Image (tube, rainbow, N blue to C red; front, side, top):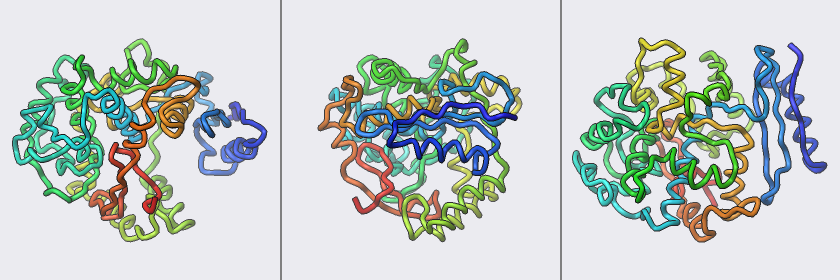
Length: 358
């Protein structure tokens, strides 16, 4: 199929746009569709997209895509907003806001523990009915299941909360926000709408058409995309000591009872539901806000630019500079069992830092 796309960039960054376009014919996205947007010093410098699939003509730079764990950045920024407005303290215990959470040995878990994947509860032992995560009507029932969960790992043991972080942070947000809004609602009301960006943790049914279809690669292709960068750079997740961790992580993917797979499983999924029904539920599951984000590159790039620029971009201030400094401070690096005990560095406000020496 012919390549469709747009490749805008400032003069200084034309080489980036051209390299990106070149990838569609010769690189790792030769059969696919994607977007690229970059900001520098608060100004957009690259805005490009391409589609070589030819499946339809609707895909563009405005199309939304599932962005999976980029959702965790959205959650961290919402908690930064809560901190900025004085609604939450990173050092406070979660049970300060959510009394029932103290059950099962969780009484000492702090807000920043959940943001940094140090809560010790990377999955739920009990299966969650899928109906509890669709919409907002039954979030109180979901909260009761979350609060009843016993802590699985002791303090100091880091295990990436791949999926469960969303429901935990979402309920904490509902307890801390004076209007008891979900993370998705706060993101929309206080961040996305003021910035005029397309980043979402829930969509209305009438917005479904904006979400582009995601194509799942084969296991072999997924492993190649993990191994090839490491082979070229000897670097995995920002560290040069993680070769063993990468090997263990890949090996664990084939063991259904491994820590990796337990923490990666959906919190609630109806295997009998049709693909259309699963898609409908995906776009309307605000409780799963650490993994079900939907955005375009333009929206994510501007959101990131707001943080890098000290809480303001294009004349719109979302956070105070002091809040952004706090969010990005106190880098805590320790081995993460989910990633084969590779070192993972998280800041006080829940941002992952590639540079562990900074």
